[in-house]
Image 1 (tube, rainbow over the protein chains, first blue to last red):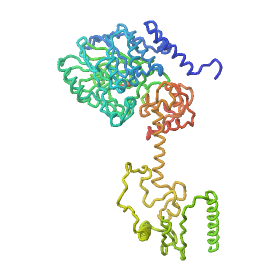
Image 2: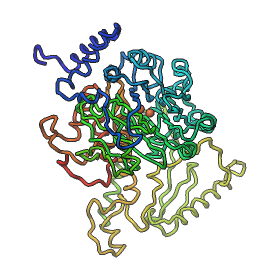
Image 3: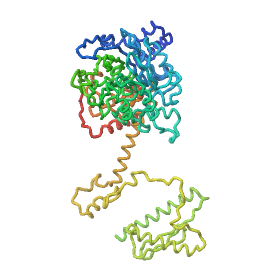
Image 4: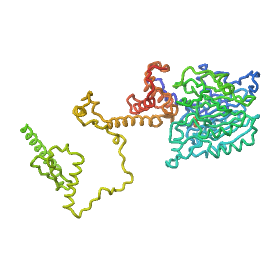
Amino acid sequence: MRKGVKSIETKHYEERDSFFDGLRRLDRRGFMRLAGLSAGIAAAKGLLAPQSFQLISVAEAATPGAKPKFSFAYISDSHLYKKELNDRFVRSLVRAVDDVNRLDPQPDFVLYGGDLAQLGQKEELALGKEILKGLKAPVKMMVGEHDWFLDMGDYWREQFGEPQYSFDHKGIHFVTLMSVNEKDFWTARNMTPMERMLTVAGLDNGVQSRFEVGAAGREWLKRDLAKVDKNTPLVVFSHSPLYKYYRPWNFWTDDADEVQALLRPFKNVTVIHGHTHQILSNQIGNIQFHGMLSTAWPWPYAPEGLPSLTVPMNRPDPFSNFDGCGDGRMEVLEGGLVDKLYSLWDRDPVTVKSSYLASGGRKDRPPTSRLPPY
Amino acid sequence: MHVRNKLGLAALGLGLGLGLSAWQTASADSSNPQHRVPRSSDGDVVIALCDGQTTLEVEGVKDPSSISREKAQAISDELMTAWRKKNPDARWDPPTRLVAQANPPRPPPASSAPVKAGGQTASSDPDEAARRAGANVQDGHTYGAFSARDEAIWKASAEQAVKEGHRVFHDAKTLGSTVAISCDMCHPDGSNTHPETYPKYQVQLGRVALLRDMINWCIENPVRGKPLAEDDPRMKAMEAYLYAQRKGVKLEYGKH
Ligand SMILES: [Fe+2]
Ligand SMILES: [Fe+2]
């Protein structure tokens, strides 16, 4: 090594030390400085699209029900390890929190889409909780399989409450589902809790079972929806897509058909899901589906089963820590449907409008990707 | 011809004698019983039983390799009958009584692969076999002498390399990651690695890259480990895995 030239590793550890140094004194100013460290490169390259952090004033009075009523933001799939082990994912979550805090006006709340932890460990979940405390808007938590399968949700529930709940907000009925239950594959194999967790954490690990809401969860949903008027717009949060996209990677909910049947009587239904780490849009009957971006890494599109309404995102640049990742925002329209904004880091933001899905892809098509996924 | 044979035998005897005496000096205190099989006066094959005493001359057979399986079974039965007569009180499990085994060993898949009917094996004389089959094919070359069993072994060996690659690809420790990141976390089932497009000009590197260059780039950057030597067994295994995942995909080097 030449004198005076630091190796990648040395530089990385130096950066990491100062980063965590800052994390210990996490007041508002320190937070901005830290977020600056994460976002600095992108900003320097002029890649931050300022419009992605401002509410779009949509002048769409011509289309009834298309005026935005309120917005909520999302952050999803941060997959945090213990901070001593991996700082990269921590930086990304901090960057997302900073993105959302810079929204003006602020969103009514922030949905956290699940997979806060990578291996469901206390340190990981606690670290995530600590960082999410930096959000100015209130947070609605959803659980992901990476949060759950070490202790079957014990610690997560202790920190964030029951994984299934509903609430009403400005005339919309919101439901958060626990859709990543799996049938017991571990007892017969004599797995330790960590072995079970690692099996579920492997997206392409076929030993695990398929995701499901399960009979008890569906019964809960049925009872919850029984008191809701069929004209009330529904917005459902689930970690896995509530339809069948690609089984080998659990881009899939095994009892999706049964859950969809419970949602079908309602006039306007939108499902927002995590887990797939990519731009993903679908419509089945009256139900519109939107995926969320991950802050940690993008998943490639599955080799088959991609819904035809999805306009895939350009394939990510592996040389960028942030490309293909991001966070985003949902505009809830007067009519109760949702326009979905993907705030892709280091790229132009992409909006997938409810009118695009409702028209079967004829209206308001989002921009297409220049390069096909392999 | 006759003389040459005799000479050959004499040389063999000498060799055997020397070998034996050398062995006896090496371990003088051990004396394994020797079964001295009598020679047949007609030059027939003589078969010895494992009791060290009983022998049987196979009338009219000079070449032991020409004995069929049925004939060999008959010889074995006859030897056993002789042994039973000599040892009327000895106990011998009848062939139908199998000793119970907790886990009966199973042959590896390659060894139970079907052998092509009338086919050749690595040990058969390819020219002779082809002549016997009367086949109008080119023969006498390396690849003419392999059986389906050989092919099954090759396939299993290749799968072994692929399997090892799958393991390395999914194991942050083996990859040497300092941040617990393994390849499958971004590339489930090896997706989006497109090995069929290499070599190609990698814009971000500013030079032409091979698949292994990109594997090493990923190991150094997202995985934060040390790059592997190009002939590192882990590198070879991962290349095997990634290519196996793209079986049937058109080879398109240089594609972007
Ligand atoms: Fe995830
Ligand atoms: Fe997930």
